[in-house]
Image (cartoon, rainbow, N blue to C red):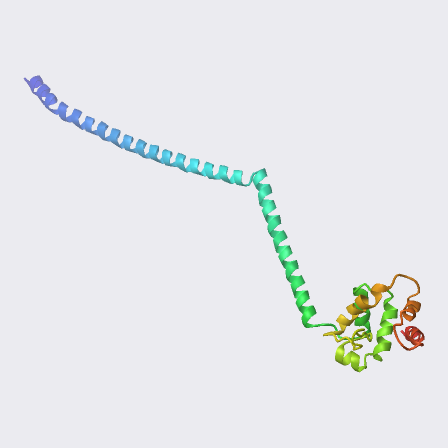
Length: 211
């Protein structure tokens, strides 16, 4: 009788125990599955991130590869060259502006430099001529007309008038020295009748000795 009662009790408790165990196993399975899903999602996200990272690195590597590196260097050199040319152009523009606004003062050193700059032959002789013609830059023709060499218009007989004495230096070549073909320059000046004074060449020599 007791055995029967024990058996009956065991049979009644068995389903509850099995059910509890089944629930526990099922719950653990669900949790395990959830953890696995999270891990899988994390791994997938990590893989995507790594893939993007690799693509970016590959793109960067391509960008700075040998050919592209040369392009970058060429672009940099071109940029530097443009900057250099722009700077040089600005310097030339500034020099022209300064030259136009601040023309050199009439002095013996400046006059001598201007004579050489214009490619005029025998610059010391020409310098002596300017000193003689202007009376050391004091004549009215020099001060009022900026004419250093007594240049006159053969048609009117009047002195040429210039805006600045440097124009007079240029005119010396275009109106006088362009005709010179060689030989003793002082004798040539006498031959072409540069001045009416027969002692003109001697006076030029006297000034040359004092320079």
